[in-house]
Length: 165
Image (cartoon, rainbow, N blue to C red; front, side, top):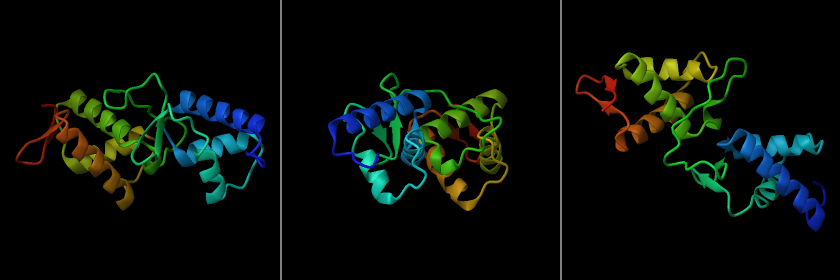
């Protein structure tokens, strides 16, 4: 990690990046960089080091949200319908892709036939291990809901109930 200009070091870090993306993708760049740095026993992660690590992500790897989230090659972000709930680890909302948040919302609404927006945000946050819907989490969930509605995966009734279309 200290000398990424050497081709052998680049290959090792690139392989670790691909392994991390395949294991946890979609994965937030910060989480990915921390995992790769930890694999090479690097504890401090400066913005410069994150940029160096990001530069080694292969061009063939798909990213979304302005290169913030990285996806395994086996996933098509536009059609991926899964989400990973968390029983033991609280996943920061900003580290969960909008697609994954929307997928959880679709499943939750489908399970009970409809929810109000605040209730949907609360139960969605719980799915990912959180208890509280902070203003930042609410903003991110609102974006995910907006994308789900715009794509026709969810619908909002005139009274504000969110349902499957």
